Image 1 (cartoon, rainbow, N blue to C red):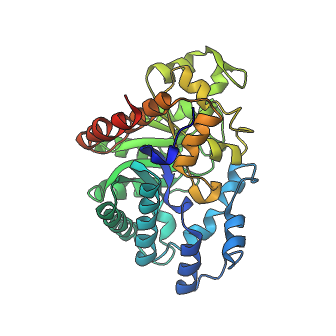
Image 2: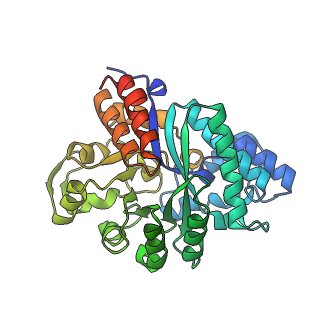
Length: 348
C-alpha cells in the first residue's frame, strides 16, 4: 500500500529556523545586507553546497549554519525567514510545529535577543494568519557557550511571543547539558517546556544526564538509547534498565532520520532504529531537524518512514498524535488538532 504523504497532516517538534532557509532568500538577503561570505552566488551551486549529506559528523554538519545565521541579523531578515519557514511547513501539510533557534547567534548586527524574538514571532504570526497551521517558538542556547542562563531568562520574559520551551543545542561531546543546570532549572520553574539535544552525536549517557540531572521533558534525537538495548540493525530484542525507563515513562524522542544519516549516526534509513524503537513501545516522533542542510521535507520523512522503515498509515497516525500530545503548546489547541484534523485523516 502506498501513501500520499503530502496530503497527510503532520506535526514537527524538532525544526531549526536557521536550518530551513530558502536558497533564494539567502541570496537576496545577502545582496541587500552586504553579506559577502557565501561560498557561491549561483543558486544551484549554493543549494548543493548547503546539502550536508556527505558531512559524516555532527561538527561538520553544523558548519553550514555560519552562512544562514550570517544573513539573519536584521529584523526584516528574521521576520522574512520566520514567515517563509512557517509557510513552507504549512504547504507541506504540517498542522502543528515548534520551531527552535538560538537568538544569541542573531545579535551580531547589534540586535538584542528580545528584538530577535519579536521579529521572528512577527513573521510566524503573519504566516499563521495566512496559512492553516499552529506554530510556537522554542528558544535555544548553545551548549558550548556560557550565556545559557541569560538566554533562558530572555525566554521567560518573552514568553508571550509564542515561546513554549527552551533547548540546548550544539556539539554534545565535551559539553554536557548539566553544565547549564541553572538555565534548565530556571525555565522549568517558570513553567516552560524543556527539550534538550542528547544522544545524537554522543552516547546514551548524554540522554541520562539530560533526563536525570536536568529534568528534560523531551529529548532532541535520543537515538543512541539503542546502546542500552539489544539492537541488531532491524529489531530490538531486549532493553536495559535505562532504556526501559525511557520507554515506560513515555519520554518523547524527537527523531530525525535523514539528519542522523548525514551526521554519521546511522548508515541508512533501513538500518536506522526509528521503526524498531516505535515497535518496541518508545514514544518517537518524526522530524526534519534542518530542511536546507538535509534537503528534506516532512512529507519526505513520512514517506521514508513508510517505504524504508515499514511504518503503516496507522503507525504514522499514532506517531503524529503522540507528537502533538508531546508538544508544549496550548493543550486545547492541540486536542482540537488531534480530534478534528489528525484522527479523521488517518482513519483513527
